[in-house]
Image (cartoon, rainbow, N blue to C red; front, side, top):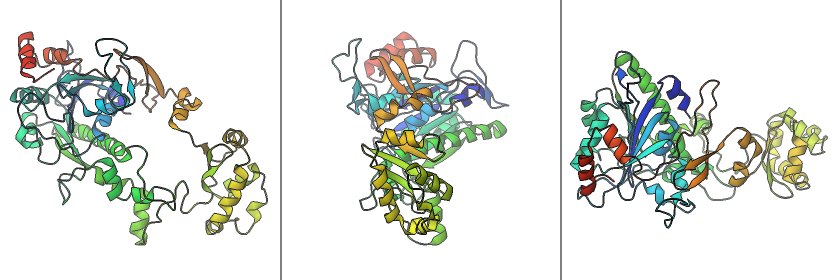
Length: 464
């Protein structure tokens, strides 16, 4: 989402992202040396990486060291890494299993090249949030692995991690330790419930936070049970809040030269995104309005209605738009009916009016209604499934689906970056990486290791 920011304000960059099985420790890095007086990086000759982005999780199977394995969150961090990925992202993964999400399938994109054609393939889940990254297999459970990560941290700008509070202290990857190595480090911790408070030690996956922090209670059919949102919306919004916080911290560092610890909790972000629902509860002191399905508690008509072959959303958000709707469905007299002539009257007579509207919408197909409502000025939309969305003419016209070439899976389609700029051109530069695809390159070119050192680390099971 912020590719253009990094392209034009920070100019260029490299990032390191380490992912193991359960936790994430991510480090945003920029390419080149940094002008400490201005806080802005500039490109170094030869492409030396002086700024990096790191993400880790899991336990190594061969090297016998304890490693924290209980995640505080799951999906917010890799999505955040992708959003802030104009810096080159180096994803450091568990040397054997890799990122847990590589196994989260089906569906999988099948390997059609190389020596992995008998394997399940690359999971769609992993592919969704790992474009524009390089992969290194590395265990930070060993002293050698920690040493490598410390070398990377020394010149990095931002680290993002999602371990439970205090879990990284014994591995010398906590903020107190790393800020001594790099005082300008911006260290963002994403957890379920934050670094402080009575729930700080609780793991917090998206769905648990949706439930505990109110979202699930107001989501679902009016007479049905609470349900979760169809995607990990709390993780995704937390990633966006964190990306904004990171950019603010980078701008702040330009003035002060100092890094800082950013504490981001899924619970806080979910409370914030309750928005008007939270405000209504605070102002009124009354219970919330409960679940409304596709309807709106204070606007009528504003919901989904059945058609002859599907569903359509109609939004008569004010008296004028209600009049437009009535004209289009062939009922121009309805706005004059005292039961429906104001929004408050329509809210009072909601069930009657909604049933009357649906008796009309079921007479035509969704496509027919879309044609009737075209250029009416009234908000309306078909209810599409995901395949319908991916093949939607407007989605395709906006270049939201991009075909890229994967090294072993061949051509594949991914969702493109959603933000368009007048000058910048964010893009999918590289496909999601294979596990360990860039290990030797990164250790050689960035950590300055020779071939014999890398060979020894592979033999020890520290890298792959």
